[in-house]
Image 1 (tube, protein in one colour):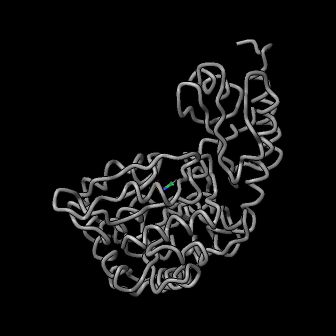
Image 2: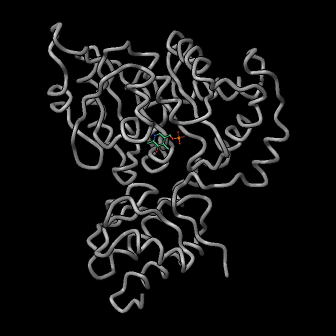
Image 3: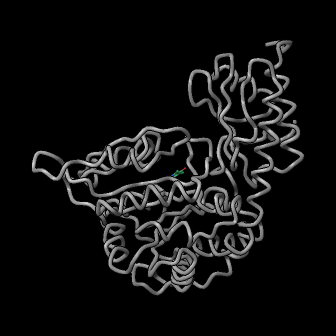
Length: 346
Ligand SMILES: *Cc1c(COP(=O)(O)O)cnc(C)c1O
C-alpha cells in the first residue's frame, strides 16, 4: 500500500534532502554567547523582511507568541484577541501562567473582527479594571480556516488599538501563506504591529523554529524571556540554516498548497450533505462540516490511506503542505469522495 497521505497539519513536513544539506553546511557558533553566524544571519534577514529593528530565533511559535506577550505586558494587564485565536486556545494558558494577564475575547466570523469590537472590549481607565494592554491578531487565522485578514480591515482594527495606546502583536505563524496568496509583503503586514511572530516549522517545511521581530528594546526583553523560559539554544545555526534555505526556496511554492486546498474543497463540496464554498478557502487549511460522526470518518479515511484530524463532533480539518504533491491530492480527493458518498460501505 502507498504511504498514507498526511493532511493532519502542515507541521508534518519533513526537511528535504536539499534542506538537510543546507543545515549540514551552515557555519555554527554558540548562540547563547551571541556568535552563531547562521542564527545572526537569519535574525538580521527576518528583521529586514518584516521591516523591524531586530529579531530573535525561538524554538516554537508558542514561545514566540508568549515571549512577545511577556515582553509587552505586566501582571494584571489584559490582552484582547479573538476567541478562536491560537494564543488563547492552544498555548496551555501561558498568557495567564507566564505573564499573569487576563484576556478579553472578541467574537467574529473566520477569526476576524472590526474596530468597534476592539473599542467595546477595551476597559475603562479606572482602578477597578485590568489595564487593556495588548491587541493580538492572527494572520492567517488557523481556526478561521486559514483565512486572510483583508488589509483594510487589519489596518482599521490595529489603528483602533493604537488610538487606545494598545501594543499590537501579530501571530503570523502562517504569515507567509497570506503573503503568497495576496502579494502583500511581510513588511506591509508587520508595519501595523509592534511585534510579529512567524513559523518556519509549518508550510515552510523546517523541522523546528520560529522568529519574533520587533524594535531593539522589545527584542532585548524577548531575549531575556527566551532565556527565562529555557528557550536559548547553542549551535542552533543548524536550525537557522533550514529556515534560511526555506526563505530562499519554499516561499513561492506556498501557492501550490493553496491550489491543492481548493481542489480538496471542490471535491468535498460535490458530496451529498456537505455545504462548503470552495471560494472561501484563502490558503492551505480546509475545515469540512460532515453529516456523520467526525471521529469515525477520520478512522475510515485513515484505513483508506488518508490522514486528517477531527476538530469537532461533525468537523474534520485537512491541511495541505509540501508533504503532499498534486498526485497525492488527487488520491486524497478520491478517498474523501468515496468515504462521503451515500453509497459508502462502512
Ligand atoms: C502552529 C501555530 C502556532 C505555534 O505553534 P507551535 O506548535 O508552538 O510552533 C501559533 N499560532 C498559530 C496560529 C499556529 O497555527
